[in-house]
Length: 274
Length: 274
Image (cartoon, rainbow over all chains, first blue to last red; front, side):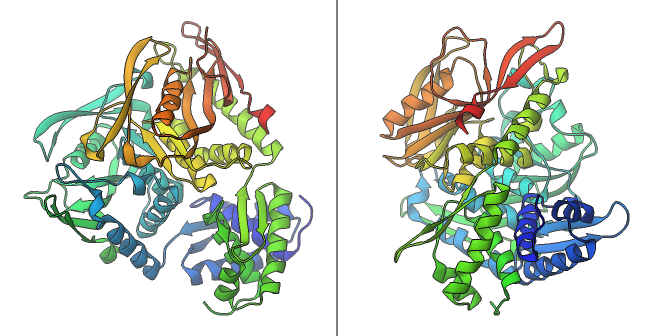
């Protein structure tokens, strides 16, 4: 790479930081890349850090020592989080989302990489101080969310399946009671898709009684992995007994009236966690 | 936002561009945000453009006129694309990937948001000049890839399902012959998850004879949507008759020897498309 002025370095470093969240980047990496003194790089980083922190994009953590460097920790400003959750609430309250049986159509939201990215950044912001090694979800609708959270935390995702596919080698299966139907179902995770001892954040698009999520928590035990937290896009308030206590919800669905085409979605508990 | 110096603006604008690929951003947006003259903003954009183009991150397209502005088009340098494909080839050739039946374990790669992001950027780079409205894939393993491609193209994703879920309203189903087994299967897409007239790029993790992808192409017709292209992470070379001609493959699997634990993966045809 040719020698750059500060302006060029700032653009390039910002680009690089955003592509490598939660990863320690050594100052030597930058000073070699730009053929610049470490002192100049440090000054560049101060400018980026100030900008990121002022706008709430995240923080740049400086790690001293031989294996040290700088780490970008994505975050979201409280007011930005508020407006994102309010936008979700507004979107979810649209009567045309109501499906037969009182379900809500959400694939347009889950199918928007832009929106999922923002939601992922919000979760990563809430979790920024927790050590996390993997994000777990269940196929199909949790995947976009898990992928976005994993991206911003810089960790891999593990996808639990409800079907049995033979193409993933040795699998671990458990039975669980789906809360809404009390039916016994099976969920499966490939043995090699989660390392023993992993600290795991579980996400899903929707939680009613929490049977599916409770199943994933049971599955963690089978892998010798630890639960760090649970996050859902929408929780349903109409639950007699919830199987999961401690979770982060972005929104809360308290009523779906199919006949009158009315939905009542409000903010979830995420605001208390910021 | 407080008035910023050039250095601060460059950091903020780079951040904003990366969050909004393929989206037209008006110069007024920036000049109001930073309380800066449009001439200063234009100078900033020249610096970012030069940097992005030199490093192959993409181009900044200037759109003149009243509704004009600037658009970030993500790309990947040819040498970066080469080294990404070579890394995929190296990873896929690991003998421990071989599963009973001659399948390859790929969930570690599909479960890495970092890697999928890079793969998504490569596809977006190949497709940068084509008008695309949506990315389509089939659950489960195509989703991380579709999500990454959709992110870099700034378009939504449509997820075709092999099971019937009742929670997505009116659905369109078709039958298709899975090439490898000649078995008739069903795939389904929610009516409202793809707009009529959409120009669609189809992606999947693996293609053998192309039966599944051919099914998705048929499904497009049902939606009055148009096929723009097809992309796969791995194509299998051991196919008597392929149902799909024109596609982009990143890698090519030509032999899996379960007994001797040998795989032969080489580069796909993507290099000819760059």
